[in-house]
Length: 375
Image 1 (cartoon, one colour):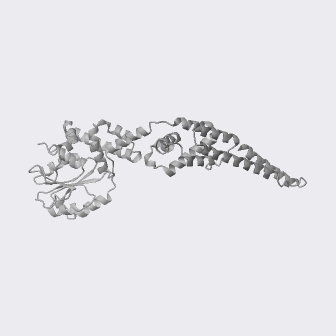
Image 2: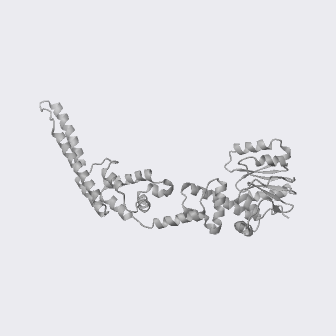
Image 3: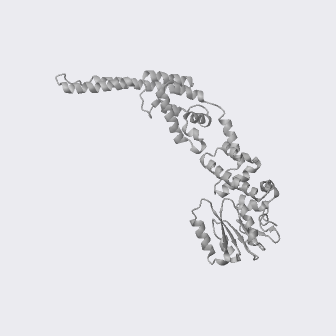
């Protein structure tokens, strides 16, 4: 039999690639057969070791695992091992390996991270998987005409896993995830996501949960509130600017950024639609409106004309009368402040005989008057 095809079985593909378990092979497995398993080690730096030439194997493995600078993790193919060496290796954390021995092993089948296979009997001693769970593996093997094509398919899945990992880290947008997985039947998606979670050591929700969340999101965001947003922005530039700044302040304090898409983080229209669909389903909250009326962020003092624009916006949005009363109160306070400013300008006029002082006073008051007119 071709040594490269000797281990092309769905179970091995499942264990070494999709489940990423360690494997102990015994007995009657020579090196050329053992190399057939390299087909399923895509994504790892494969390091081959002959144990009979090494007296400090455990220390070598520990050093390699803890001091590797490679972006890809290491996988060790170690052959001619004695039982005591295998037990020592099985005690190590964070190691991936394929071990070869010709000894009859005891108490090595209890470790769930290691799968034991006897090539003589062609049986797994501690691994039982229904055929239904190997459907994807059987599909990959049967659809590949030769070893090279199967290797390409496995490499393709590894590349896809890297893209999925980046997507999950950046946005977790289920629509993008589905596009990336689009080359495969949806019944195989869970298997690929399992590989991503194990290879990159991250937790990923089940695909059914992701799709359920996505569908719910589509239902919730079906309604558009851009007309309200345009009304606010188009009526008065300064009032609209304050509204946008307050939106982003609300997002920072009240909204988990993980729930927002990139556009919703930085596009105020998208953010407003998100808030109206998820946080403000009953309308813009009164507390937010009261903060808006204060104009505390921009410190822009409302003129009588601004007050009228504000009232017009609030009326068109059909907001409560209590908010309009708050606005009128703010307008009254603004008018009162203007009167105080004017009174301040007309008080304590220096004598015209002290012309330099009078000129300085007049210049200051003209500046004050200009500020009031600009409001």
